[in-house]
Length: 228
Image 1 (cartoon, rainbow, N blue to C red):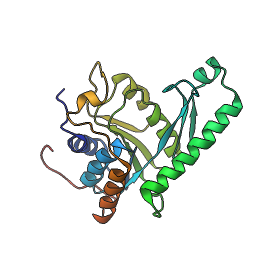
Image 2: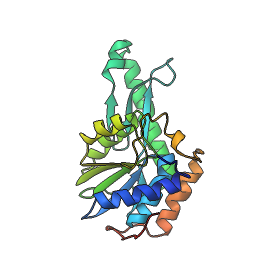
Image 3: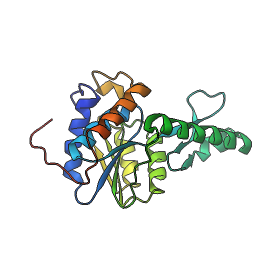
């Protein structure tokens, strides 16, 4: 596959693919910060839908760097990797303390990004979870579990690029999955972007403010002809 120019380009390609798969009823776009917000902004704009963040935090194993024993997400969901917890003999007290700290961080980041605005109500809507790509899918699995607790009518996962295996695994957990590209091997998500510069917290806040100011609060779809 050809590489995306940047997340904005990826979001437009993804939006076109989502529009073909999702129709009917009110829609909300929930983006995983930080990179997913740039993609989600384009999807929400294309679909004339409201945009919000959906925060996921890894539960890191103390002393093991990037190894995760689970994740927590907006909505209070917790996903535990029992293989890691049992295999490393992680005490319940360590797991509970890590969960407490990361739940607090989820709340802090939501307030940082959203300010005093209330969380987007997705009850009864088609909720579209967006990220800039899926490698292991751990964060997205946690996001799906967290979103389910908010009672959406349907859950859609949409990403510009993903591992074929992860897309297949996620398809069993959601109503619709849209993976615009599934190269094999994936190598990494960033490999498929010419510009994969990381977004800052200020970037995320700015995109959300633009979405609010631009009135991206519609419930339906806007028809867009032609390729992005």
